[in-house]
Amino acid sequence: MKTIATLTMNPTIDVSYEVDSVFHTRKMRTRNERYAPGGGGINVARVFCRLGGTARCYYLSGGATSAALDGLVDMHQLVRTRIPIEHDTRIAAAVLERESGKEYRFTPPGPPVAAEEWQDCLNRLAEADCSHLVASGSLPPGVPSDFYARVVRIMQKRGIRTILDTSGDALKDGLAGGGFLLVKPSLGELRQFVGRDLESVEEIGEAAKAIVDKGQAEFVAVTMGHRGALLAWQKGVLHLPALPIEAKSAVGAGDSFLAAMVYALTVGSEPIQAFRYGMAAGSAAVLTPGTDLAFPEDIDRLFALVAKHDETPSLRS
Image (cartoon, rainbow, N blue to C red; front, side, top):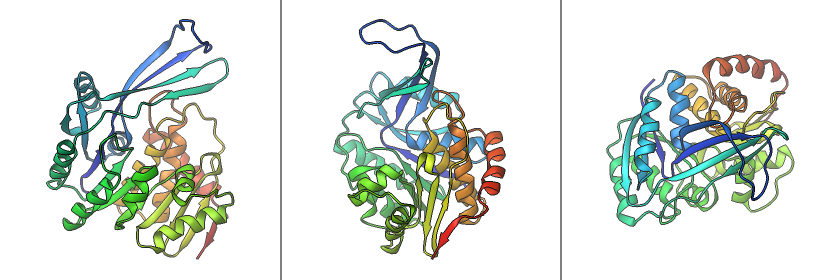
């Protein structure tokens, strides 16, 4: 396995709390306060390294909160390349209401990024030394919606395979240029991408397979929450049902899924096995509270359950 790189254009300082009940106006005393470096690519790197891999994190960060994010990245012993920007790195919060078991998540849009700042990022990526690049997360204000298409073109010239996990116009315009190894939308993101409701597994599979048929990505993994996950590739579509587990937090489930799937691919697993491993990691992530992510021991335990649960998968060509 070679070193991968991750790209986080809109990182966060992730803060999580627990309260007994949520009320308006009143001051609510919290407990179990946690801080973690966040944003898609950073989360992917955290899980990828827990599994035994090596990853370099590329991310934009600036302002008064930049040093705090760097410190959190260092606490997780991640190798980093920070691309400096002028404005403050965003802070996202997740609040668990213990009385109801509901989680409330607050995510700002992120700081504005100047043209010279995102161009500096592209210049840094042109020197990346890795086998795969995982570009994950939203684009902050000021970054063009075709930014990820520009990234994949740079990576293609250097023989580096690119994986994409984003949404909205960044997904649509990113995929327009094609050439991705893997793209991982959620069901909601895929629906937004195609511009219509996708209800049945067959409809979802057809929409994912269309991305493959257009040459935009070799593999499309769609995460569908309680409905499981779906993998589309040239030979067909595979749907796996969700594991029967009790969720504690949805934070980082998709990132954990992607990290484990990419890890399995880099160590030589077949795509379907890598997909199953990703499924186990996504399930493992929802077992952890707050801003934490999947742990290897939970992934391995649930991977055995995925194989057992996956006795009669829906597979079509």
